[in-house]
Length: 82
Image (cartoon, rainbow, N blue to C red; front, side, top):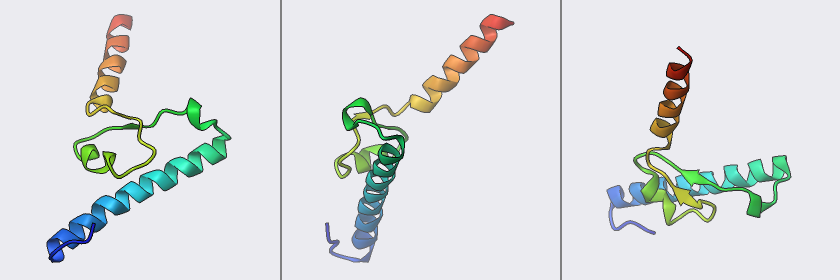
């Protein structure tokens, strides 16, 4: 966790910081929604998600193309209406 030089220390801080942010935001959302933790699936997406996957305690799945998959579905629904 602790870097051996300035760059490693900064990288470590970024990764662990983001993992902590993800965990904190998800905990607040579950509390606000009064959700049963077993009923919630947390999906990480995006190019840098793999860096946080192993450090977050709340991420259940990883789908790197989730945004593009969603955009394709929206496009397909709109094309079928035309």
